[in-house]
Amino acid sequence: SGFARVFSTALANLHRLHPDISLELVSGASPVDLAAGEADLAIRARAIVSGDLVTRKLCVTGWSLYASGAYLARHPGPFDPETLAGHEVIGFDPALAKSAGARWLAARAADVTIPMRSREMTDIIAAAASGVGIAVVPCLVGDAEPGMRRLTADVVTTHELALVYQREARVSPGVRAVADAAPGWEGPAR
Image (cartoon, rainbow, N blue to C red; front, side, top):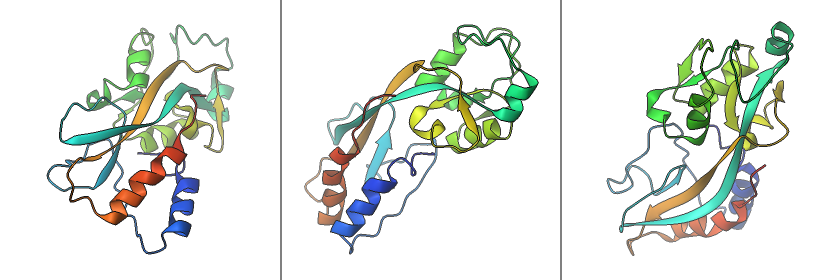
């Protein structure tokens, strides 16, 4: 969840080239079952191991720490990203424990207060933007969020995003057009 904004330019270009295609975006941390037909394409942030699926790298996303001005007014510093002790940190639901941000945070989250956990990136960002605490989020999303301040100049971790779809020959021309547009979404970690 939370990546629609990142792909909005590519989606607008796709619509301009293929006005007959209408996309339905299903967002959330729970993966859809492509084999069961729950979706034609998926963006995944973890390795896919299946001979029935095609996986194409979209980009490597950088993750960093973000907080709102309200949070930083309550906790003006000093701030050391290697030890978050004494800070309020928005945690990840156990379902996201393998995400790059969750793994990085787990290694540095001794002696923190976790006011909330979520499995949805949109909830984590909304909570951080409202001052609940510090959040570890993809830079592509965090940098675009009004009112959020990035707390580290460099990324703290990275993770690959991939486009995944069925290998089967029955993939429709519309699905193929969307999949073919995907290379235009590539970008560096930031």
